[in-house]
Image (tube, rainbow, N blue to C red; front, top):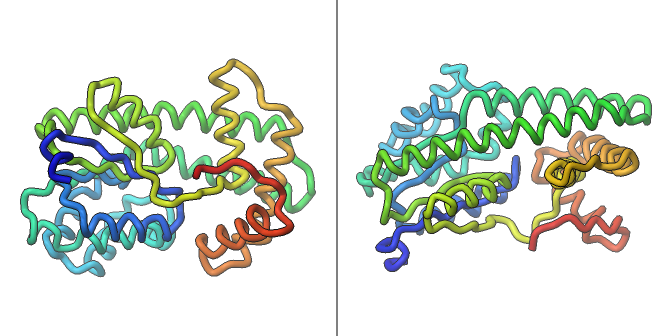
Length: 279
């Protein structure tokens, strides 16, 4: 660790979306890591409130202020479910280590795009569960649009990280970036800029949900200038509709739904040979 701090290093921590388990693991590691700077995948407008939390503000006060700010577009309950372990790990951090720097890097446009995509896909899922049919044209347009928009937002957020890196003179410092699977794109940009960076996955093995698999496969096909087949879209869209209907809607929270799905559909004796995963 001392060598890492002297040489300077970016560690990009990859946390699957929505899973509290990955945030809990990240929080436990954060508590024992001597990092100099931390980038959070949280709206930039919340940076001052996160700073107050790190200075010792009560967690309940922090959440009340986030709610009052009306900055988040998603329900604060789902947002808090994922991020609470990390925020608790940061509370009072700057009392003990005043020199640590914390930056929130998510853009408003990125969050708006994510919410709009989620709303659109929710409607498409509702149609499948109501009619049993998949509108392939609409699914393809939605998924391809999502891939293109996400790439633009990731680039802008990485630009922001790089700008802060230079303005705050973080060269030679141990820096952690909390991200999702877009962390791979951030990694490439950082390495292209000559920065010593690496990925660290917080939950392994991780099995991508059908929707995540569809988005990933669509991104690969787009890079090749090809179209994902109608049959593949129908298959994965119906699989995700099943995930929503039989797991999300029948579970207490996302973690319970996801791990039940993994057990039933992926790793159990009656699995569907779902092979998209990271070990």
